[in-house]
Image 1 (cartoon, rainbow, N blue to C red):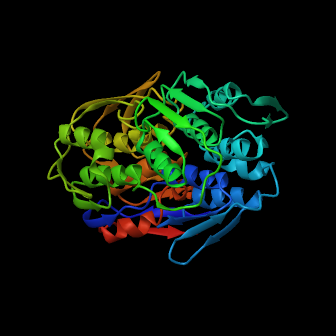
Image 2: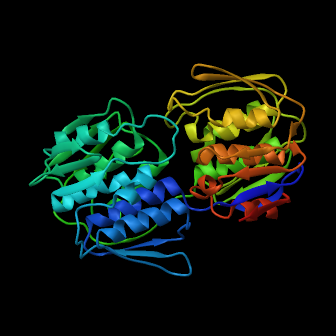
Length: 417
């Protein structure tokens, strides 16, 4: 199993290019199942999660081809199965997003309960509540969910929590349902808007994506289309945080500044210089960062996916910072690993109190989940002595060639198999 070895601290310098957003491309791959025509997705990041989602749609009978120039072609005209592989669905939670498209187009699906990072309870009840409101009959048993519907019908659906996955799944199902579907208290993330843009290119009629109320008028048929997903705001935020924590100067190219405003605001509060351009952001820090408090919230609040990378920056800042996690109840697993590197952190329920230290020390640590792995990498770049990060397959799920990108910025980092 691969490990990353980071030698000594460094100040990151240079330019890094951001890949397409994992959290945008996964639902878009699922949405391709809504059409019999070919969908072409350009500039794909060949992440482990993307490979799993490709395997999922391929296992249903879709013809999938990935070219050498990272163009993914999906033709779902000959779907042969409405039952998914237990092993594939258990690998990644986002694979559950095929339920809406399959139910809408074929009227039935049998799918296992989803897996993914062990960062806390992420119930699927909001997804099922939406499908039931649209007329689906749902049964659960033996680790599987079965859903049937002669024809989904539009309805008003209020989400108890603005879940991104539930919003996406219901929105996709509504595109081929009869009549109007209204999703209230919908998630507002940029990935929702990107999915809406993709569906609209296919012929869907959607209004309000990016607000808390989305209206979808069902149509009888969706056509194929070509699409390029938005840049990954979490990858961009990770490099922004790494630049500031290492007191570096990095231009993050290929990013939408509007998508990372909560991160920009907090970095400025910590004393970093942040310059915004049309499609790029420059982060520069000439000294030690100042302490800051954050509270994770649904978009446009501070993203939960950036909580652990931010904590790494806090660990080497002046003063005491407080992190309050409101989205997932088990997203502090990286703290025990950070403590091995000399971090001073106390946990009180859903809050973590971080007392900044002058220097961290290299140690043997393990990535407990995707974003925790990114946090450990940032801390390793600030630590005296070598750091060995194991279980980096978690990191590979969300970052493409991260060690190569870090090396380009001056980091001494290598992968060992």
